[in-house]
Length: 147
Image: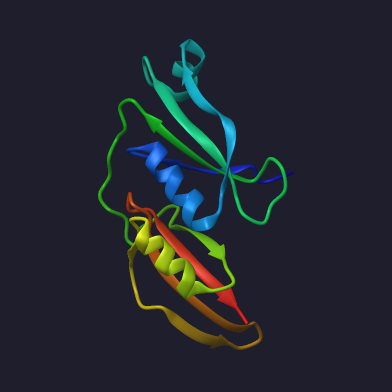
């Protein structure tokens, strides 16, 4: 068994993919996805569905997967803004060398800081430095470093 990808449905997949490429050094795996047809209608249970997007290879992994799949439907369905305690898939997390550097990079590329940058010793595990932020579309991302 092998973990393959996580999917984000985006309002503007190109802009969101650009954020993850610039901030977290994800690598686009081409070609772009342009999915439609009877087979996709049946798979999604959506009539005349059209999906476009890209897979981004996550940092720290070799060729292929796992990926962050960023897709956009012609007719997305919106939800209320997520909070850190919203039920369901809550956030993505990236381990980085310097949390402050990545936070600044995220803010410069349309991200928004959610809470305070925090440093805490966790007995038996070490010291974690972390912060939550949102990408430009409100998806929550944790940036962390363990020492």
